[in-house]
View 1 (cartoon, helix red, strand yellow):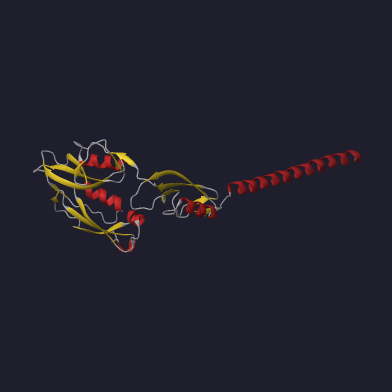
View 2 (cartoon, rainbow, N blue to C red; view 1 turned 120 degrees about the vertical axis):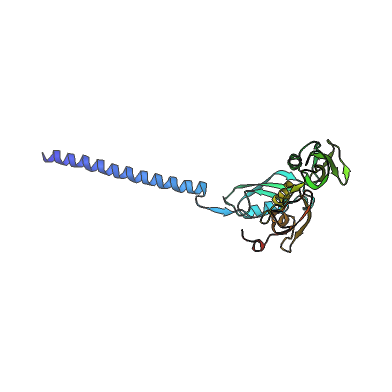
Length: 265
């Protein structure tokens, strides 16, 4: 009987011992897996993406290597006022948090001007023409209003005060002026409130209301082309008003990157 009890206790101890060993092994394996995953994924180890704008590709690669990431050029644009070959845009943006080794996509300013085809805007509405110019990488210049049966109907397209035919290859970012109609019974518009808007959005809003930009005045905080794109309107003349003005009138915008100068809304 005693031998039987000893045998039972021995078996029980053996089972408990093996269960404990198994549990220890499971814990060790789980801990090892967690450590492995943390090493592989660099869990909770994030780095800040530096600002590559205006750097050469070589400079961007060197900075990326120092920061624990890599860069790749995938596209180019042509900006006349920007250094050729310099970084124009990046993704993710500067200041973003990414993991070590992340690839940063760069768009650079092309060495040679990109050519685009001049569209045929005749017969388009002014807004349709604006959208078409933007899609081609062209810039709307001045709206020139003349008497016509249909207001804001495009009658001519000009480059440098000369008519330009559709299909002509021109440099991207070329400025295109539009001669548009103005019916005597439909000549009024309103000055939009563009204070607080960035450069491009402000221009689109003014043109969208059938008005022209007469002057852009940048304060001392705007040091380069990138600053001009990021600048916001802190003052405008004339100011927005409920009183109508004639289509084609001029608006002056005052721009800054100093947000303290922008009135609270």
